[in-house]
Image 1 (cartoon, rainbow, N blue to C red):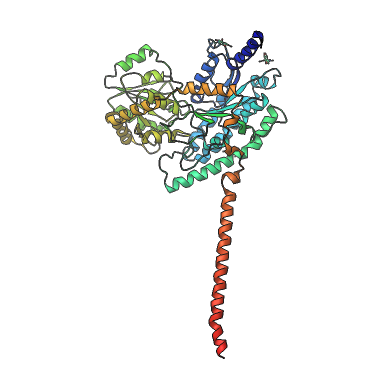
Image 2: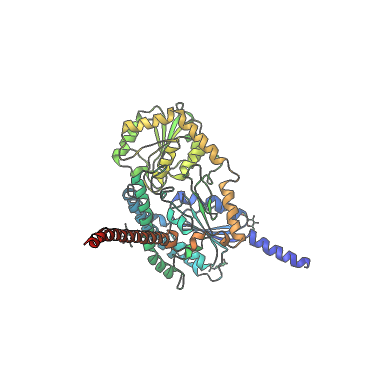
Length: 516
Ligand SMILES: *[C@@H]1O[C@H](CO)[C@@H](O)[C@H](O)[C@H]1NC(C)=O
Ligand SMILES: *[C@@H]1O[C@H](CO)[C@@H](O)[C@H](O)[C@H]1NC(C)=O
Ligand SMILES: *[C@@H]1O[C@H](CO)[C@@H](O)[C@H](O)[C@H]1NC(C)=O
């Protein structure tokens, strides 16, 4: 081989490995879903890949010259309209929640596909991508992998729903690993086991019944001739889930499921704004940080719940910092400071912090754990009840039900977590364990992304479960066969017994005949 040829081959390889074109899509209009993937977009673009990312919260970082963001921020309007329903109706009823969630996602994604920049991307003949990285709570955007004939990595910003695990061929067990929107953890009682099994069946039914409608959406916005959305997601090469075996329930995973683990979004510390720093420095007794995240708004709390919280706060010897989305909080006690936006990660790093009161968003809890802050949880919806139950079962804090809590129970929980050193000790222990790993979550995600690029997919790691029809996977034919064999055996046995009895009766009666 001539030197020139070697050089050519090398340069082709170089371009391929180090300059892939990646399409990233995170359709969910929720800040926490978006920030979970930002470090990945940043890192991949810095490594020389060309990224186009469809996001509802662009980073707009001019220094990232290899990253193009298509802004889908308008999706929040529809999302916020439906969010109240999701929180109120979905609070105690996981089936209602999943139905509303799927319907809402469907509507949001259709809006996004109509957007002119997205349409331009779909219909640009010269456009191509080597890889699609798509958030997987809903299947429609996977049509992009067919459009660009490229391998796909699916991702979730929380642990994946059981239905998603099934689609990549990862066995799921409703009792060992109940779905992420069910609040069950540890050992399930009989009632919980029944609910978990039924939930798996019914949520799958909801999901499947949406597919024909979504196939029409694909036809409308991508064109004719696409395979069905039942087929396309089966080609997913890898699934990145934002879970880890320390905080989440242990789960057996196939090699195509990568637990990229939490904490990727943790930032280096920045100085606090001056007035905030002064306020926290002066909190000699310590302070409590209270935030319900970005989906649940503190301002949406019922008047009753808000009064319970305010009265409890007024009787505590601590300063309270409350992320509150309105300018004015009626009846605000002296020791409470409100603000619409707060640099949460830097607040967790302040030495005077005593406690974090949270709705149980995964990203917020990761920030608290890694910064050694114990918690009191008040969950509302989605994976929050599960996260809070896991937090309590790990001894990192206590939980309260916003429907039943009163001033006394609220105060009691807060004081117990602050004054009993057990909780802080457990938080430190869990943070230690979570950080002791061969590579960080971000490094793991980048490595596997480039692995999929190098091998143009991961067909060789595909789960054999994907090739099995349902009746084989659930052993229906084997069970049917066993029932048949046992049935036949029982029938034969009964027949033989009957025959023997008949014979006995016959011989018992015969001598009588002889005597006559
Ligand atoms: C952009 O990608 C090129 C290679 O394609 C790389 O050399 C460069 O460092 C990247 N720049 C930034 C700012 O990410
Ligand atoms: C969800 O969408 C389906 C079909 O469009 C509809 O029949 C159902 O009523 C919707 N459910 C809710 C809770 O909006
Ligand atoms: C189509 O895609 C190519 C390749 O990315 C790009 O250079 C071009 O500007 C795009 N055309 C339009 C009309 O967006």
